[in-house]
Length: 223
Image (cartoon, rainbow, N blue to C red; front, top):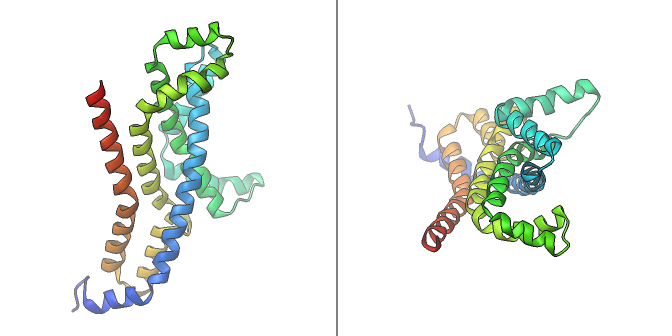
């Protein structure tokens, strides 16, 4: 009986390389758009969390606590299976972007909040004395200083987001893991399929993870 990594299985994978290439490209697009959404939500809700207005802080906590304390897969299932019952039909790619974007936006919001709160309060007060509004001071004065501290955890969130796109395989999301599952389930060549899939994820995540570690070391040296 041939083993899980028999040579003919690798040859079959090479012949069907376009299946994995399509999933890889889809994962990159999904990750890029999901990260863009996550950054937008994270910055917005992160700044709400630093506001002195109680309503804004409440909105931050509701979003962050609800999203962080429910599994991503449940959120994806709600978008994919639940919204149609409300008359909202979304393409599975859009479900993926919304799912990972909203999920990681909650974590990025905490990163932004912590980064902003690490900036001395005197900076904000100085901005007010120069005529800046709260949002103007945040955008032009505080955030440029906070981003240096926030870069390493933000990069780690990008890595986690890329890996979490694999959850969409459960709803036929069309990304890399879905293509790997579909291809291997038709021929039972699971060994080569998952090895190559893991290496493709590694090729995306490892450079980002290494960049985050370099940034953390620079912060330790400068602090």
